[in-house]
Image (cartoon, rainbow, N blue to C red; front, side, top):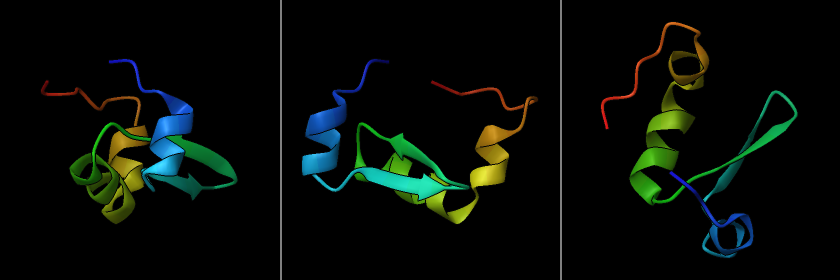
Length: 49
């Protein structure tokens, strides 16, 4: 998926974790990441979409 970085920032769909910015297509994805970023950053993570 491609995310427009500036649009995501404007919509408040960006978050910083360990000094790095992550941007998201929607609020649900941002909240999931915010609650458990290590799950999504794990090398073994397999996206379901």
